[in-house]
Structures are given as structure tokens and as C-alpha cells.
Image (cartoon, rainbow, N blue to C red; front, side, top):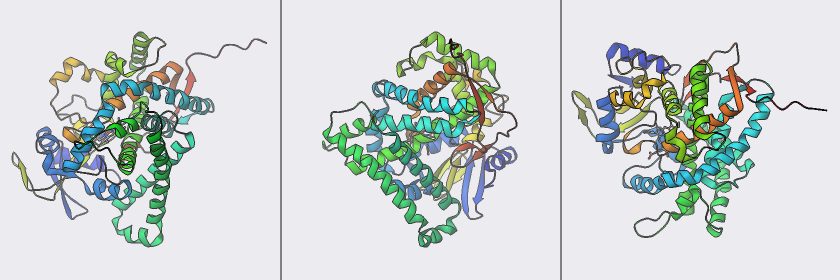
Amino acid sequence: MFRNPVQILSSYNEIFGDTFRLYLGGLKEAIVTIDPSVIQHVLKTNSENYQKSEIQVKRMGHFLGKGLLTTHGEAWRTQRRLIQKGFDRTQLDALSSIMQDSLAESLRDFDRQAHSGPVDIYPQLMKITFAMVARSLFGARLKDEDIDRVSHTICTVQEFIVRQTLQPYLNPWFAVSGELRRHEDMRTRADAVLLQYIRKRRIEPPGHDLLQTLMDARYSDGEGMSDELILSESMQLLVAGHETSSNALSWLLYLLSSRSDCLERVRQEFDSVLGEAPLSYADVPKFEFATQVIQEGLRLYPPFWMIDRMAVADDRVGDLAIPRGSTVIVYVYGAHHAPRYWQNPENFDPERFTKANEKLRTPFTFLPFGGGPRGCIGGNYAMLQILMILCDLLRKYDFQLAPGQMIEARPMVILRPKHGIRMTFTNTIAPAPCIA
Ligand code: HEM
């Protein structure tokens, strides 16, 4: 189960149907479901009864403090309302140029790597997307070394949280051996870096970034957020946004590398909509086919392959009794690959997402961004980011999968490529000949 949960859960779906019960670690009851009506009930209709799981609230909360990812009820609702403004249309328009500049800078580094041989696109794309999210939050002047430090801290702390969760019997050892303290100190040092930017902004002219949205937000009594709350909300946005888009992009490039027909169509769409112009949020609705391709990539490889919740009180959906305290696992990967909801589910077929076909789809069978009130706050940002990066990569490069590698998905918190994905990149426009 720990080695390959996707394979096991999917085989249980075949044997037991859309919903089945499982005893996690032989002890704790979990209900695993791909049934759209149960998913809708848990994530949306009766979402008040389903809290985020222990890993999110307790373990992540220990390192990340209180924020969107780690709170419930009224505290969460108030913060969500305020932070949502940072992802509305006007704000995403304003962020487009910061994102584009960050991308141009990151691609200079990527270009050097690409010229020196095949690159593992996963860490490269993670670097690119993290810098974009970090600069969207803290502004274009965020220094490279600060981005690297915070990114390193988030990756290390996240890995530690996964270890704490998968091997809970080691927690006393983590405490006495100093492992826990080492990770807490790391987090404190990253906090100090980001706090500098927050305090500086209090006395500087306003920016057009998410930090400004957080600073300008006001509660009903007219008060704003404290520096510490802004820090923990920013850190949580970085955590939620740092590995998701890069993951989606990695799988997308992998899928496109064997579908030159789709690749060319996407390239032509970028050309005809934009010419040489940079992409901004206002352009997003114009990319019909590219959006279909991204959605199909997210269907086949959903970064969050499952979403877990804990029932606060006894509940019932149709015939299914959900006792208080049980974990409900919305098995996103299973829903995306179920033959009863998708024809030839293993095929890469962007036509599934044409407007006409979308109308035929059963609701709550496609959930890359979750669903209901706790669905992804950064979904539109992520689509913009993925389109921007894809557009610039396709303008600059042709790419192929490097031979002799095994591509496999590893479902940890995120559905990562287990051994990376190595690709070779060649410039689409050959450099001008050098005339002596
Ligand atoms: C392809 C990229 C992305 C995917 C697939 C994705 C997916 C998701 C999913 C499935 C959830 C719901 C989790 C749950 O219900 O337990 C979620 C929540 C969230 N996402 Fe994303 N996400 C992406 C990008 C981003 C980005 C770029 C940001 C921020 C810059 C972001 C910020 C958040 C936050 C803050 C939440 C928690 C919302 C809440 O609880 O109110 N995500 N995301």
C-alpha cells in the first residue's frame, strides 16, 4: 500500500466498486470513494462536517502556523474571503508582468542547463514556478538567494512532515535526536528572511503583488492582518503553490513529447493568438486547445492524487454511513481514470475537454483543483502560470524524451515522477551564423 497506493486503490475500485472501507494501518477506518455524489456531499454540500486531515492541521500547522491550509470554521472563512481578492481578475492581470519577468530570468538559467545535455525537467520546472510564485507574493525585487533559501526550507520541512506522518513511531526519536529542533530552526531562519520584506513594505510605496493584497485587506472592524499572520499566510501560499504547477507541467511536457500533433496545434495557437507578444491573464480564454491539453494532463496526472477529510459528526450519503472520526479519502486519481466516467481513460485525448464534451461530463469526476468551498484558491493563477511557461518553452525549444529511462509516477503528497523526467531541448530558431 505505501509503495504503490494508486495501484492498490484502483484495483480495489475494480473489485469493490466506487466506494469501499479500508483500515489504515489495520486500525483507523477510512472510506475511499470515487463516487461523484459522495464526493460532492463531502467536499461541497455538507463540507462543514468534514475537516482537513491531521497531517494538514496538526503536522503542517506546527511548522506553518495558522493560515488557509491549516484552519477551519470562521477563522478560515474570513481569511479565505480576504485572500481571494489576491487571485481575482484585476490582480491576476497586474501579476502577469511580474510573472513574465520572473520567467524570463529563470529561463536564462534553464537555457544554460539545456545546452549542456539532457535535463531532468522536474527540479528545473520547480525552480521556475517557485520563483514566479515567490515574486508574485513578495514583488519583483525579491532576491535570488532569498528565493533559494525559502524554497530549500519548504522542500526540507515538507519532506520531514511526510516522514513524521508515515513513520509516527519515530516522532519521539525526532524530538530527542534534535531533528525536530533542526527543522524548526530552519523554518525560523526562513521566516526572518520573509519578515524583512514584510516590514520593509510597511514603510515603502505599495506594490502590485499579493503581499500588498494581504496588507491592504481589512476585517469588518477595520483592522488589518498582523505581520506574523501575513507571514504565515504567505508561507502557506508558497507551500501550496510551489510544487503543484511544476508537477503538472512536467507531466504535460512528458505527454506532449509523444504527441507531436497536439504539440504543433498548441504552438500554432500560441502563435496565432499572441504572435511575439507576452502572455497576460486577459489572453487566457483565447487558448482553447492549450487549455484542453492542460486539463487532459491534469486528468491523467492530478498533482493531488487524493484529498482527505475527517468526519466531525456521524453522517450519511444515500446508503453510505460515515461514522464520526472516520477519514474520507476522495480518490482523485481513481475518479480521473474510471472507465465508467471516461472512455478509454488511459488515452491522452484533449478532445474530452471541448466545450461540447464538458457539458456531458458528470460533475465531481474531474477534480484537479478539488471542489467546494475549500477548492484551490490558486487555480486561475496556476492555469496562467502553466500557459505562460508552456508558451515560452514552445517558442524557444523543440524537446524530446531522453532515451533509456523509465517514467513512473510516485504518489507521495503529490504525484511526482519517481525517477524524474530527462529531456533534451534544442532551440527552435537556430542561432545566426557567425561571420568572421
Ligand atoms: C496545477 C496547480 C495546482 C493544483 C493541481 C492545485 C490543487 C489544489 C487542490 C486539489 C486543493 C484542495 C485541497 C483540499 O481540498 O484538501 C488546493 C488547495 C489550495 N491551493 Fe492549490 N493547486 C494548484 C496550484 C496552486 C497555486 C499556484 C496556489 C497559490 C499560489 C495554490 C494555493 C492553494 C491554497 C492556499 C489551497 C487551500 C485553500 C483552502 O483551504 O481554502 N494552489 N489546491
